[in-house]
Length: 235
Picture 1 (cartoon, helix red, strand yellow):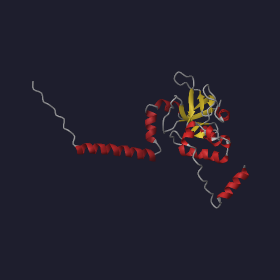
Picture 2 (cartoon, one colour; picture 1 turned 90 degrees about the horizontal axis):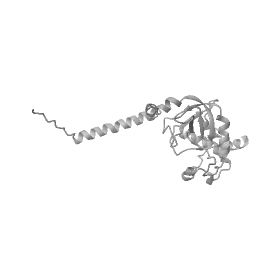
Picture 3 (cartoon, rainbow, N blue to C red; picture 1 turned 135 degrees about the vertical axis):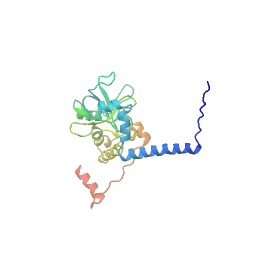
Picture 4 (cartoon, rainbow, N blue to C red; picture 1 turned 90 degrees about the vertical axis):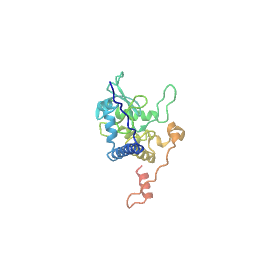
């Protein structure tokens, strides 16, 4: 029995270049579309990709905070694998660490934890995941924004009260906003910003260096010096 041999037709160099060019254009088009539409490509991949279970389970849903672990970490009343509760790490903010068996408490750790506890522990909060970056941190904690019963965001309240630092190690959709909130707290000298020393900053922030505050923008028809005087008068 005689068989017919099949020969693969080699792709020409021009054809290969055309395929690569098409792939590059497709990636660029998706990136531009994703940027202009506020992250829907990332959202789709996240919600229907490996993180679909967390999106379906937590995003936009309300839970009770059963324990505030420290300023930026809390437990909510939903089982997570073998655990009875889900541990949530507040996204975009880093509060001073409480004392543990290896390290003493960082400056302002107890105050930050008490502030978060007073706002969140025992209350019902709504969890929001982010389209940018990972849904879980390296310790398996859920990374999220936490909306309090009054509609404010716990992550933001901590920054405005000077109870934590805008975490610039990782990207998220509120990155610029959180730096702005931190700058407000620094200008006001509230919370830890009243007396924190450079050596008391988190190690990652010591390595990065605390950026200088940007100049304030004068209000329309009002010189900047007058604005600063009014702020001092207001306390």
